[in-house]
Length: 79
Image (cartoon, rainbow, N blue to C red; front, side, top):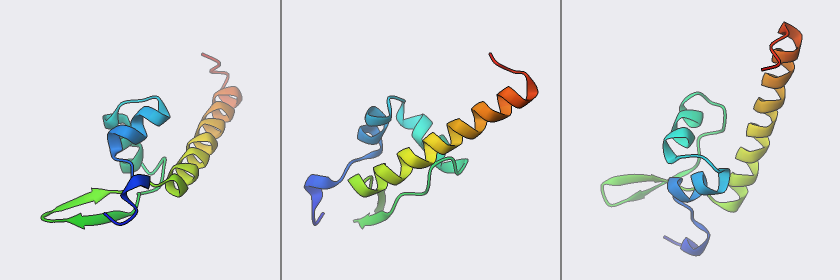
């Protein structure tokens, strides 16, 4: 890929998030983090987790976790 030294695959992105690749896939499906850009590579479509995307995804995840924590406090579910 052009600029491939900056491309991360889902497993590498998962490692940076500190979760499994399956969790990253679920976060994308549930729209907790945005859908990453994709590139066509032969017959495959590959998600591209660039540094810019990772910053955006981390911000979205932080906001999601803050909102979830606030809902927990409002309902008295502190854990």
